[in-house]
Image (cartoon, rainbow, N blue to C red; front, side, top):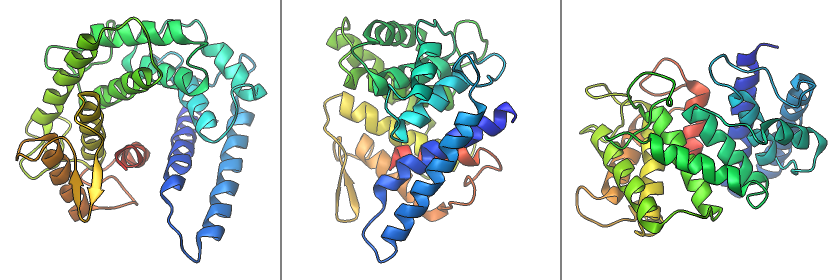
Length: 287
């Protein structure tokens, strides 16, 4: 199997695992649960058959250990325990590796936080400091020290996901002011990306995309909670969090959800011809 087939399966596995938690009571719920479980088992078996002897999976050039981290996170989210032989081999493959790409560093932290944050505390902290160091002046993240190019919302979303999990895991050695500064700058970055119609674009002047709008929703929810504004809640048909003025994160999230509601699709990424599975993962994160 090619590496892109593996990454698509890992992304689909993550999406299936995470979306299942929002299933509501219905006549067909038991049948749906059985179908989801069967799908998970097939996906896990696919990853098992494609796992290499060293515990990893075939990587994408220039993104060292990124596919292995993604597959390991998928397995953990599918309910596999850290001491499961397949997961343990993958964790051994990731353990002690110093990564140099925003996607990969963030995914490695997410894996370690999901598996055993105490055991991997020093690596989670090192990754956290790396991400803090690589945040650009505009509040976003690019690919990393060895990759040219400006910040983009995709790297920035994954950086925030990694930092959020590290903070929740209780990473030590960081002062509250360090956390506050990084999340304030990130919040301002995402605010600048939001279009007047509520959607989020990949770059200034571009139309909104479903994937980036979901990324914007999740990112503003993270920054809002990290800046002590409280968790977002649903009250009737409204989202309640982070203040009530027109430019507050609460209202920005509400406008983004309105954009998504008007264009909602599950069969493809609204406003963009590709990145379907990426959109599904971002949609789950927003949810």
